[in-house]
Length: 68
Picture 1 (cartoon, rainbow, N blue to C red):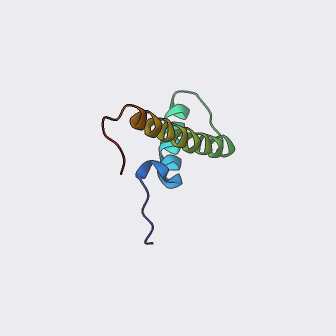
Picture 2: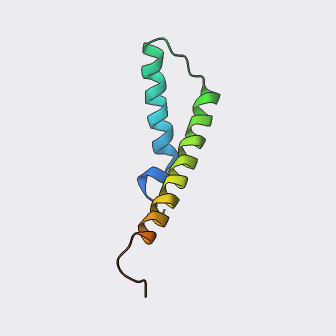
């Protein structure tokens, strides 16, 4: 496993976080099935990619120095 990626690009991390949130939701009466959890993981990864892209564009537009 030589490829390196940020933690927020990991399906394992997002899956675990959503599983924890689903368990917490279940404790307060909100039922989230496995298929919905999978959809939430995909949505979280897509939102993270969009946010990262927007942040990169914003950073470049507001930068003070040129890229060489």
